[in-house]
Amino acid sequence: MTTISPERIAQIEARRDELAAQMSTGNLDGDRFVQVSKEYAELEPVAQAAGEVRRLRAEAESLAYMTEDADADLRAMAEEELRENKVALAEADRRLALALLPRDAADQRSAMLEVRAGTGGDEAALFAGDLLRMYQRYAEGRGWRVELISASEAELGGYKEAVVGITGAGVFAQLKFESGVHRVQRVPVTESGGRIHTSAATVAVLPEAEEVDVQIDEARDLRIDVYRSSGPGGQSVNTTDSAVRITHLPTGLVVIQQDEKSQHKNKAKALKVLRTRLYEAERERLAAERSGTRRAMVGSGDRSERIRTYNFPQGRVTDHRINLTLHRLPEILQGEMDELIGALIAEDEAERLASLEG
Image (cartoon, rainbow, N blue to C red):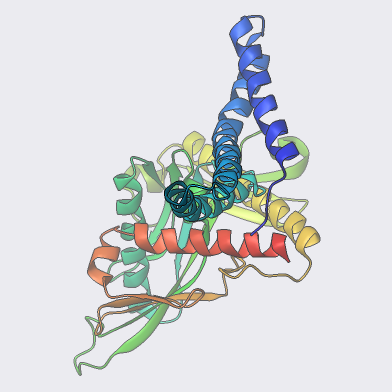
């Protein structure tokens, strides 16, 4: 376990106190107050963890001195408390080390979640629909807002592809390990012989971009085409040029949006999707430069990586990255994903701590 030096702990607590003093003066203008408040909110839990480590270390020194006392009863009591202190201090050291780990700057952001049917035809589309409902229920259970951005429905139900925006604090941190290939093993509703089929769907979770993250010159960088929408949506959709196709000329990235009846709304949604995908592409480029070929234990977020299997005959969900199997498939599909997501986050934290120690 990485041990944080007393000097580093003192620095953390001093900075926290300095920020608190700045906020209490009332002399900060609006922008500066927001900046200082944000830093304080991020530092306060770290400072609390640091303070607990400092307290337990001081307690350990006192107890160690008492174990040398001539009184046998006092010595025995001190030795017992010292053993308890050792356990508590190890856990406090771990919490502090975790608090000091570099954070993904996008962790606190909202996210865009994309689900696409893969191999398996109609059954894959049905499974994509199951996954989308699972994430919607999980999000709603946490008080997040879910907005359907675009969807292409399949003939027998489910989705060929669907994109939703999930708005709330820390959405990306909770869902970022869901990116990859999800596989289902079950008897399709269209199968008369009772045979188990394997199908797949792809999930991508992208942190939502803000306008300041991606600078786009609409006149120079974009080609915007409008045309009549096709598919469901009512007569007005099909009789007006409401669909929007945006091509980002520097990268060739194309985004199509036609779910809304309003061309203006379709353009706004398409730009939102475009910014998010450009932002994620830049994040992936920077991450590749920093880490080289290293891949995290819980996965790289690569959409081609098979990450999880949902086995209906056995009622189990297996995450292949951390070798975790839960026999709670119905509950998980109802959005009860806390145990699964918590295990992935814990594994990521453990791997990052190990990399610091190595």
